[in-house]
Image (tube, rainbow, N blue to C red; front, side, top):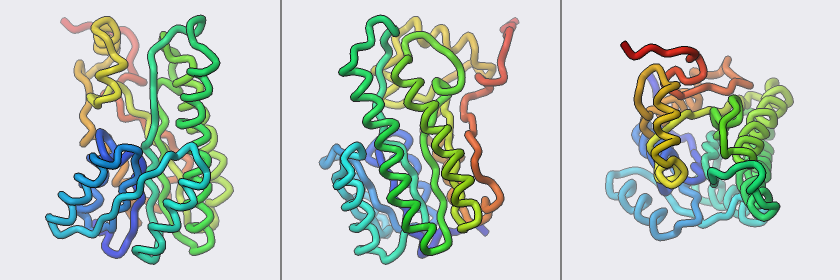
Amino acid sequence: MFSLKDHTAIVTGGASGIGLATARMLAGLEANIVIADLNEEAGQDVVSTLTAQGHDAIFVAANVAIADDVDALVDKALEKFGSLEILMHFAGVGLEQSAVDTTRETWDRITAVNLTGSFLVMQAAGRVMVERGYGRIVAMSSMAGIRGGTGRTAYAASKGGVAAMMRVMSVEWANSGVTVNALAPGAIETALVKKMHDAETRRAYLAGIPMDRYGTPDEVAAAAVYLALPQSSYITGVTLPVDGGFDAGGVIKRR
């Protein structure tokens, strides 16, 4: 019932974490995969593994905050596979730092990658999809962009901006066969989270997660892949929490 045969998917940040898990699931549904990442060694390893398993995949080194890199990424996907039906835009950076300690340099770096990068990639893919009358775009927001939390001024602003931008694009492209949605993961065990979450952060998170655990990249990837299917055609403009109930939680008694 669910197949992505002959669909081409760009996965930014696809060399690790949620992006890697998503690329594997998309490949399992027979999509052509374009891995975009700054980590060329890891990206090439992913492609080698996928191709060894019989999947069609290429790697493109790209900095999503650089417009020329983004344009080249889309061009290479079209050159190799002839179409672009899916964008999974997951490339991003993060840092846990208080508002008063956040420097302009930190602010500019995080917003350049997370917000400006999202605009550039979604715009470039959207142009192709709108022209061709079909597309599925899934961007990466965060629960940090929905709920307030300490140490996330720049990160939260960038991720809240992604959700806002997604809603605008979803409305503009709704009559063009293109859906645009975002995921808002909570605490997910990725390499980025392991760097950002110290012991106190983990304690605070777990106290507010009804499921009492961190999520996995595969759990986020499964939500992303659903939004990439042709069958998700009536879902657009949605920011979907993947958070173990964190957004729904209030006072949680463990006993």
